[in-house]
Structures are given as structure tokens and as C-alpha cells.
Image (cartoon, rainbow, N blue to C red; front, side, top):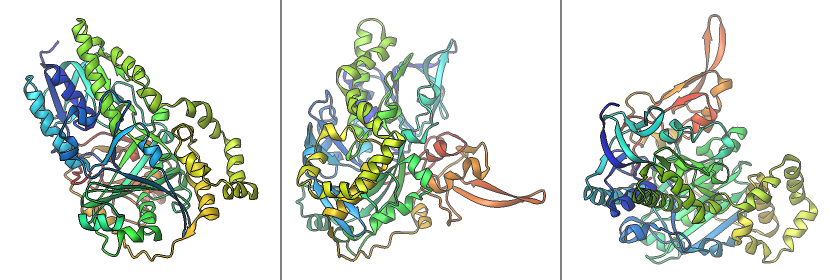
Length: 552
């Protein structure tokens, strides 16, 4: 075998999962090298986002990094609400009990600030054991010897061998795909999140949301304001800004030919938001990402040879109705993977860490949260076509509406039940039909005038920073039939917008017209949507290249 630089552990990605793994390894004296693709940790990362510390979790981010909440987060989410919407009628439920269940704390975060702070701490810790953190390094795949994974290959530096490889490289993990542990074949397995960060003075946040400096609010939205696409919206208060976004099932976006930026604008311009956004809306950043649906893709055995997957790379994103948790599970998984390696090494067999890691995920209850039994038993049944049709018809019928009107406080209590929420099927019933009926039957009309004018798509993508270098997406079939869905589903393209990542056009070839899709990777936000809905060959840009988020 060719001689390669060797470390005990290589961690790819310095988000919460990678940082947790690296810190735990370093704290146990393991020589650890961390590779980060961005110019800075967080420059490639997007989240809604709330980060949780669960009471039942064996690891929390503030347990690993004691100053975390004081230095890296925005505001604690002390209040939680969900708004059922039908036109201008709204019925709001307090879902604080649901979000405070098994919760020590939950804070809003902006990923650039949070991840870059984590990266500085990780670099300090890993340098003490002979490693460190390298930024602007793109780990392109896995190094193998006689068919076995022994390290990683990189675009900017020579291959690196390690006794443990931690893939914390996100939802578009090239390492997981290289190992055959992830694919992009089914849009039903993914959500797409799109977010705007809007500037707001801290005193104005306090006034408009009726909170103090050490308080914050999390709002969720569902109903008919998203044109029947399955999913919903969110608004989180940050220290000096708001995170406002939407999260939808990707197959629903594709089937409805919905355009993500228009769905976001439907939320931004709804009368309900006038009280919070006022007349001075100023957008700081527009971003997007894919989100794995853990109920379907959380890997039961997230390892192969010396490789272990953590966080989004392992599908460890819990999105079950109003429960949206991912970063906390990545932290737990990263620390458990490191713990597994330390244990395996102490037994003289470091390369068996993956088996220990898999066992720990199950023993610590992580997999039960990501793949709840209630969904397997009840939720999937509700997705069967005839049953789905019947339940939607019943909810909209006179009988269903009578039942809703006479629920009393039962509806709000149902929204606050972790057991019932874990059973929610991935259909229009819980995301569109039932919230709409609840608002129509129980809601009150909102009369505020919303004067927000969201930026046009070209302004949004023009304000982002890009340096793509070589193209990282290749169209394998540029026919509209094969790749046309990317035009609408891509968050930086649109049918009526000539710029953006994807465009469709009629091209005259040999005397006849063809409907084709063309591609420009320059304004790409690297969300990976096109890899799922179109016929493409997709890779990350080189280290330090591509989009750079300032908020995240």
C-alpha cells in the first residue's frame, strides 16, 4: 500500500455532529484531524433552527462545550405556538408542553456564528492530541485498501489514512454515498427547507414578540397558505434578527410543481405576520437545504469498515409534524461514535468501533426517537391511498367539521402529545386538510394589513456570495422530461426567471424544437434538491468554493 499520512481519527465536517465527535475523541486523548469544506465552519450550513438539549440524551452540546449557550446561541425558545390557517382565519394552539417535554433547554441559532465558535474550540482541543482543524478541504471520497475503507481522499491534499473515519459531512454526504450507505433515489425520503433571515433590532424583537432579552418565541404555521404542498412554516426569534422559513416534503414540491421562494413569500406576506414584521422588513440572507426524513432514512446500521456516519449524513433528522430536531441528535451520535471508538481501541480492536456505535444508538434510545414505533404501526397505515382519501374526505365533511367544533381543548392537547405526534402520517391530512378545517371552524379573522414586499428571486441570489470554480453538477439528461422538475423545485430557479441554477428553454435542433433544461452552477446554494428530482451527477464544489452563508 502507498504510504499515507495517518491519524487515529479523521472527522469530515465541523457542524454540531462533527464537533461533538472531535471534542469527545480529543478529550479521550485520540489524535484527531478535522476537515471542513467551507472557508469557515458554518459557511456551508443552514438550519431553521433550534438546537435542543434533551434530558434523556447521554450527551448535550453544552455538556461538551460548557460556554456554548453564552457564546454561540441566539435566544432560548421559551414559548411555542402553532397557527392553523385558512385564508385570513387563524386558530392558534400553545404547544409548549410538546416542546418542553424531555427538554432541558432549546435555543435559536444561526449556523455561521454557532459552527465557527465550535470550530475554534475544536481546533484548540484537537491540537493538544496532535491533530487540528483544516478548512477549505473537500473530502471527495473514501480511501480503500483491498476493498476495505481505510481513510479519505481529498481534492486539495493527499489521501489520509485513519483508524476511524467520521462522516459528519451533512445531508449531501459524499462519504456516505461512496460507501453505499445513502442514495438520492426517492423524493419521499426528503424535506426541503428554505429560509430568510430578517434583520430586527433586539429592542424591537422584545417589543413585537412581548419577550425580554433572555426570552424568545418559536412559531409554526400550517394550513391552506401553501397551495396544498405538504409541510409548513416557522418563525424563530434571534438576538437581532428573525429566522423565517418553510419545510416541505420534497415529493410534494415536485408533484405540485411548486416554487420554493413563492411558498416562503406566501408566509412572509400573510396578514398574521404583519404584527411581527411591521413595515420595515429587510432580508439579510436567503438559503436552502435538504432535510432527511429520519422515519424513512435514519440508518439502522450507519457504519462500514472504519467509517461511521453521524447527523444528516446518517439521516438522523427527526421531523415529525411540529417536532423538528436534528442538531441535538447529531451531537449525541457524534459523541457516541467517539465513545465507541475509545471503547473499541481499549479492547485492542479500534476498527470495530462501528459495531459498538450501532449498539449505542439503539441502547441510548436514539433510534427509537428517529424511527418511532408509532409511525411504523399507525402513521404508515394512514399513507395508504384509500385510507388517505377517506380520512381527508371525512375531515372536510359536515361530520368532521362538527367533530372539530366540539373538540373543546382536545385538539390542543393532541398537538401536545409526543405519542400522537410520532404517529403523524406524511399526508395532506395533518399538514393541510385538518389545520385548514380547524381554522375555518374555530379560527378568528386576522384584519392586519401586511405590507411586506419580499425581495425578488434575482435579488435574493444576487446577495449571496459564490465562488464555484469547476462545475459541480453535470446534467446526465437535459431533456425537460428527465430534469424539468429541477427548474421549479430548485430554490434559486423559477419558471418565469431567466437566471438561477436551472432554466428550461425551447431549442431548435436539426429543424425541430426540443424542450431542454440548461444549467449554471454559479448561483447554486448546494442544497442537493436537483440530485433527487433531476437526472444529474452531483458533487460538492472544491474546498472554499461555492456558496458562502454569513447567517446560515
